[in-house]
Image (cartoon, rainbow, N blue to C red; front, side, top):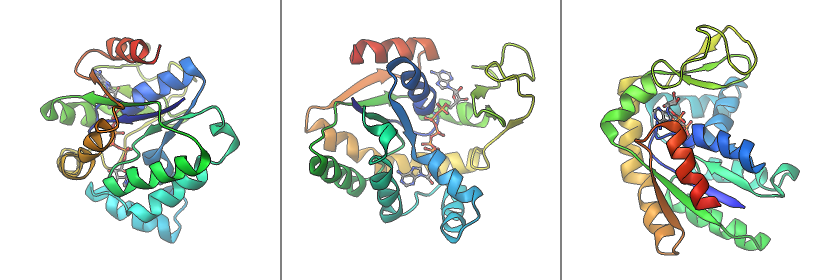
Length: 214
Ligand code: AP5
């Protein structure tokens, strides 16, 4: 199964993609995570990505298309994949269509997670993750069972993303509405888009997704 999850920053794309990865055994490909790995590597490309990401702007189409094009050819993508954060512009969507067509593959579902912009600032500024295993949490909506201890690995150190501040989130939301929202029309014209209510609690969003995917 090839699945695209679309939604603004904080919509819950990563949260739901990780659950689907566990439930359906298909790999989550998060372009945000891939770019953060490049930033950590301190390469020249990483430095350029860091500048764009910390301002809330998108990185260049060429770079991200190259990254995805080689990633989906790897062995762990043979049973399908969940694209979380890609495509994010019409040129990226067109490049993905061409890549898949060349491989004789097609997109099964494009899931739009619909949310209110106003709630997203609270979601993003409250987000943190385990420094050891990367499990995601929220100050209010998804606390660890024992305060200060990761539910998954027992880690006691947590991190926050440097682009998770109110000012950057506003730019990320603008980028979403200007550059990413048009891909919903692109895939809507192909009859591929289904929408879920991302304002519902996390488990309820998962149920909506499971109902669509079967
Ligand atoms: P990326 O990492 O993809 O960030 P984003 O799209 O802004 O999305 P987020 O990861 O912030 O949100 P999410 O929807 O995954 O929400 P989450 O599940 O964590 O990209 C970062 C940057 O990289 C971009 O700004 C850009 O510069 C660059 N980039 C990436 N891809 C690119 C591309 N293709 N082209 C160009 N540039 C690219 O949830 C958020 C919080 O809310 C969590 O704490 C969670 O616990 C909580 N939560 C989730 N669901 C719910 C719910 N239903 N109710 C209550 N709380 C909830």
